[in-house]
Image (tube, rainbow, N blue to C red):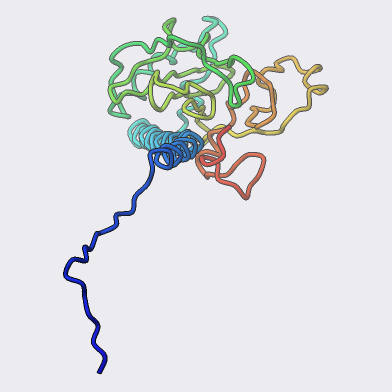
Length: 252
Protein backbone atom coordinates (compact mmCIF):
# COMPACT_ATOMS: atom_id res chain seq x y z
CA UNK A 1 0.00 0.00 0.00
CA UNK A 2 1.45 3.25 -1.05
CA UNK A 3 2.01 5.79 1.64
CA UNK A 4 1.80 9.45 1.20
CA UNK A 5 4.70 11.06 2.88
CA UNK A 6 4.36 14.59 4.25
CA UNK A 7 7.29 16.84 4.56
CA UNK A 8 7.44 18.01 8.15
CA UNK A 9 8.85 21.28 6.95
CA UNK A 10 5.87 21.90 4.71
CA UNK A 11 3.92 24.96 5.76
CA UNK A 12 0.27 25.31 5.18
CA UNK A 13 -1.28 28.71 4.71
CA UNK A 14 -4.95 29.60 4.83
CA UNK A 15 -5.65 31.69 1.79
CA UNK A 16 -8.25 34.38 2.48
CA UNK A 17 -10.57 35.66 -0.21
CA UNK A 18 -12.20 39.15 -0.10
CA UNK A 19 -13.27 42.21 -2.05
CA UNK A 20 -10.98 44.93 -3.13
CA UNK A 21 -11.71 48.51 -2.18
CA UNK A 22 -12.66 49.28 -5.78
CA UNK A 23 -15.20 46.43 -5.82
CA UNK A 24 -16.75 47.62 -2.56
CA UNK A 25 -17.04 51.17 -3.85
CA UNK A 26 -18.65 50.00 -7.09
CA UNK A 27 -21.16 47.87 -5.15
CA UNK A 28 -22.05 50.75 -2.88
CA UNK A 29 -22.46 52.98 -5.90
CA UNK A 30 -24.87 50.55 -7.53
CA UNK A 31 -26.87 50.27 -4.28
CA UNK A 32 -26.99 54.05 -4.05
CA UNK A 33 -28.32 54.40 -7.59
CA UNK A 34 -30.99 51.75 -7.00
CA UNK A 35 -32.00 53.40 -3.73
CA UNK A 36 -32.17 56.80 -5.39
CA UNK A 37 -34.50 55.39 -8.05
CA UNK A 38 -36.78 53.42 -5.72
CA UNK A 39 -36.95 55.49 -2.53
CA UNK A 40 -39.10 58.33 -3.95
CA UNK A 41 -41.62 55.75 -5.14
CA UNK A 42 -41.65 53.98 -1.77
CA UNK A 43 -42.03 57.27 0.13
CA UNK A 44 -44.83 58.34 -2.22
CA UNK A 45 -46.66 55.02 -1.72
CA UNK A 46 -46.45 55.37 2.06
CA UNK A 47 -47.75 58.94 1.92
CA UNK A 48 -50.66 57.95 -0.32
CA UNK A 49 -51.64 55.13 2.04
CA UNK A 50 -51.60 57.58 4.93
CA UNK A 51 -53.80 59.99 2.98
CA UNK A 52 -56.18 57.14 2.10
CA UNK A 53 -56.52 56.22 5.76
CA UNK A 54 -57.08 59.86 6.76
CA UNK A 55 -59.68 60.30 4.01
CA UNK A 56 -61.70 57.29 5.18
CA UNK A 57 -61.57 58.57 8.75
CA UNK A 58 -62.79 62.03 7.71
CA UNK A 59 -65.64 60.63 5.63
CA UNK A 60 -66.66 58.29 8.44
CA UNK A 61 -66.74 61.10 11.04
CA UNK A 62 -68.71 63.52 8.88
CA UNK A 63 -71.12 60.88 7.61
CA UNK A 64 -71.88 59.83 11.16
CA UNK A 65 -72.39 63.47 12.11
CA UNK A 66 -75.14 63.76 9.48
CA UNK A 67 -76.72 60.53 10.70
CA UNK A 68 -76.70 61.79 14.29
CA UNK A 69 -78.07 65.15 13.23
CA UNK A 70 -80.87 63.59 11.19
CA UNK A 71 -81.88 61.34 14.08
CA UNK A 72 -82.05 64.26 16.49
CA UNK A 73 -83.29 67.08 14.26
CA UNK A 74 -85.52 65.10 11.91
CA UNK A 75 -85.46 64.91 8.12
CA UNK A 76 -85.39 67.76 5.63
CA UNK A 77 -82.12 69.23 6.90
CA UNK A 78 -80.88 70.50 3.56
CA UNK A 79 -84.14 72.32 2.86
CA UNK A 80 -84.33 73.68 6.38
CA UNK A 81 -80.81 75.02 6.63
CA UNK A 82 -80.10 75.90 2.99
CA UNK A 83 -83.19 77.98 2.22
CA UNK A 84 -82.37 81.50 1.07
CA UNK A 85 -84.28 84.40 2.62
CA UNK A 86 -84.84 87.07 -0.03
CA UNK A 87 -85.72 89.74 2.52
CA UNK A 88 -82.49 89.16 4.42
CA UNK A 89 -80.38 88.34 1.36
CA UNK A 90 -78.85 85.52 3.35
CA UNK A 91 -79.18 81.98 4.59
CA UNK A 92 -80.42 82.73 8.11
CA UNK A 93 -79.80 79.22 9.47
CA UNK A 94 -76.32 78.74 8.04
CA UNK A 95 -74.54 79.54 11.28
CA UNK A 96 -76.93 77.25 13.16
CA UNK A 97 -76.09 74.35 10.86
CA UNK A 98 -72.39 75.07 11.29
CA UNK A 99 -72.64 74.89 15.07
CA UNK A 100 -74.83 71.80 15.16
CA UNK A 101 -72.88 69.84 12.55
CA UNK A 102 -69.61 70.12 14.44
CA UNK A 103 -71.39 69.31 17.69
CA UNK A 104 -72.83 66.12 16.20
CA UNK A 105 -69.43 65.21 14.77
CA UNK A 106 -68.05 65.51 18.33
CA UNK A 107 -65.29 67.77 17.06
CA UNK A 108 -64.36 71.21 18.26
CA UNK A 109 -63.09 74.16 16.25
CA UNK A 110 -59.86 75.08 17.98
CA UNK A 111 -58.53 77.66 15.56
CA UNK A 112 -57.99 78.57 11.92
CA UNK A 113 -56.01 76.68 9.32
CA UNK A 114 -53.51 79.01 7.69
CA UNK A 115 -51.55 77.67 4.75
CA UNK A 116 -48.02 78.88 4.23
CA UNK A 117 -48.00 77.93 0.55
CA UNK A 118 -50.45 77.65 -2.32
CA UNK A 119 -53.08 74.98 -2.75
CA UNK A 120 -52.70 73.18 -6.08
CA UNK A 121 -55.18 71.38 -8.27
CA UNK A 122 -55.28 67.59 -8.76
CA UNK A 123 -52.41 67.29 -11.24
CA UNK A 124 -50.46 70.41 -10.24
CA UNK A 125 -51.20 72.21 -13.49
CA UNK A 126 -52.63 75.28 -11.75
CA UNK A 127 -53.14 76.98 -8.42
CA UNK A 128 -56.41 75.60 -7.14
CA UNK A 129 -59.73 77.36 -6.97
CA UNK A 130 -61.46 76.56 -3.70
CA UNK A 131 -64.86 77.64 -2.47
CA UNK A 132 -63.15 78.41 0.83
CA UNK A 133 -62.26 81.83 -0.52
CA UNK A 134 -65.75 83.19 0.04
CA UNK A 135 -69.47 82.65 0.68
CA UNK A 136 -68.71 80.47 3.68
CA UNK A 137 -70.35 80.45 7.08
CA UNK A 138 -67.94 83.10 8.32
CA UNK A 139 -65.15 85.38 7.17
CA UNK A 140 -62.25 83.26 8.41
CA UNK A 141 -60.44 80.72 6.31
CA UNK A 142 -60.65 77.03 7.26
CA UNK A 143 -61.65 75.66 10.63
CA UNK A 144 -58.91 73.82 12.48
CA UNK A 145 -60.61 70.88 14.17
CA UNK A 146 -59.63 69.10 17.35
CA UNK A 147 -58.54 65.98 15.43
CA UNK A 148 -56.11 67.98 13.26
CA UNK A 149 -58.27 68.22 10.12
CA UNK A 150 -59.17 71.45 8.37
CA UNK A 151 -62.76 71.92 7.31
CA UNK A 152 -65.19 74.48 6.01
CA UNK A 153 -68.95 74.50 5.52
CA UNK A 154 -70.35 76.34 2.52
CA UNK A 155 -74.09 76.94 2.20
CA UNK A 156 -74.85 78.46 -1.17
CA UNK A 157 -77.31 78.04 -4.06
CA UNK A 158 -79.56 75.94 -1.87
CA UNK A 159 -76.81 73.43 -1.20
CA UNK A 160 -74.82 72.38 1.85
CA UNK A 161 -71.22 71.69 0.88
CA UNK A 162 -68.45 70.54 3.17
CA UNK A 163 -64.76 70.76 2.31
CA UNK A 164 -62.09 68.96 4.28
CA UNK A 165 -58.31 68.78 4.29
CA UNK A 166 -57.85 65.36 5.84
CA UNK A 167 -54.34 65.98 7.21
CA UNK A 168 -54.58 69.63 8.09
CA UNK A 169 -52.13 72.09 6.60
CA UNK A 170 -49.46 69.45 6.03
CA UNK A 171 -48.69 68.69 2.40
CA UNK A 172 -49.35 68.00 -0.35
CA UNK A 173 -52.28 70.46 -0.08
CA UNK A 174 -53.77 69.36 -3.39
CA UNK A 175 -57.33 68.87 -4.49
CA UNK A 176 -58.07 65.16 -4.68
CA UNK A 177 -54.99 64.25 -2.64
CA UNK A 178 -55.73 65.56 0.84
CA UNK A 179 -58.49 68.08 0.05
CA UNK A 180 -61.98 66.81 -0.78
CA UNK A 181 -65.54 68.07 -1.21
CA UNK A 182 -68.82 66.55 -0.04
CA UNK A 183 -72.44 67.65 -0.20
CA UNK A 184 -75.65 66.89 1.67
CA UNK A 185 -78.27 65.37 -0.63
CA UNK A 186 -82.07 65.58 -0.47
CA UNK A 187 -82.14 62.60 1.91
CA UNK A 188 -79.75 64.35 4.31
CA UNK A 189 -76.94 61.95 3.48
CA UNK A 190 -73.38 63.12 3.03
CA UNK A 191 -72.34 62.33 -0.53
CA UNK A 192 -68.85 62.60 -2.09
CA UNK A 193 -68.56 65.06 -4.95
CA UNK A 194 -68.25 63.34 -8.31
CA UNK A 195 -67.15 64.57 -11.73
CA UNK A 196 -70.18 64.92 -14.00
CA UNK A 197 -68.19 65.13 -17.19
CA UNK A 198 -64.78 66.16 -18.52
CA UNK A 199 -64.76 69.21 -20.76
CA UNK A 200 -62.35 69.85 -23.60
CA UNK A 201 -60.39 73.10 -23.70
CA UNK A 202 -62.62 74.30 -26.54
CA UNK A 203 -65.81 73.54 -24.61
CA UNK A 204 -64.55 75.39 -21.54
CA UNK A 205 -64.25 78.60 -23.55
CA UNK A 206 -68.05 78.80 -23.61
CA UNK A 207 -68.53 77.98 -19.93
CA UNK A 208 -69.22 80.77 -17.45
CA UNK A 209 -67.55 78.95 -14.56
CA UNK A 210 -64.90 77.19 -16.60
CA UNK A 211 -62.58 76.69 -13.64
CA UNK A 212 -64.99 74.18 -12.02
CA UNK A 213 -67.26 73.14 -14.89
CA UNK A 214 -68.07 69.44 -14.67
CA UNK A 215 -66.60 69.15 -11.16
CA UNK A 216 -63.38 67.85 -12.73
CA UNK A 217 -61.24 64.98 -11.51
CA UNK A 218 -58.80 64.25 -14.31
CA UNK A 219 -55.16 63.49 -14.95
CA UNK A 220 -55.15 65.87 -17.91
CA UNK A 221 -57.47 68.78 -17.05
CA UNK A 222 -55.81 72.13 -16.40
CA UNK A 223 -58.86 73.64 -14.68
CA UNK A 224 -58.21 75.38 -11.39
CA UNK A 225 -60.93 73.25 -9.81
CA UNK A 226 -59.53 69.99 -11.11
CA UNK A 227 -59.88 67.68 -8.14
CA UNK A 228 -63.09 69.08 -6.65
CA UNK A 229 -64.98 66.06 -8.00
CA UNK A 230 -62.51 63.44 -6.80
CA UNK A 231 -64.07 62.41 -3.47
CA UNK A 232 -66.32 59.82 -5.14
CA UNK A 233 -63.41 58.11 -6.86
CA UNK A 234 -61.31 58.26 -3.70
CA UNK A 235 -64.12 56.58 -1.77
CA UNK A 236 -64.55 53.66 -4.18
CA UNK A 237 -60.78 53.58 -4.87
CA UNK A 238 -61.17 53.80 -8.63
CA UNK A 239 -59.05 55.95 -10.93
CA UNK A 240 -61.27 58.53 -12.70
CA UNK A 241 -59.78 57.96 -16.15
CA UNK A 242 -59.22 54.21 -15.84
CA UNK A 243 -61.68 52.09 -13.81
CA UNK A 244 -59.21 49.19 -13.81
CA UNK A 245 -56.72 51.12 -11.66
CA UNK A 246 -56.69 52.07 -7.98
CA UNK A 247 -57.33 55.74 -7.24
CA UNK A 248 -54.85 55.89 -4.38
CA UNK A 249 -52.15 54.03 -6.28
CA UNK A 250 -52.52 56.31 -9.31
CA UNK A 251 -52.40 59.80 -7.80
CA UNK A 252 -50.66 62.21 -10.21
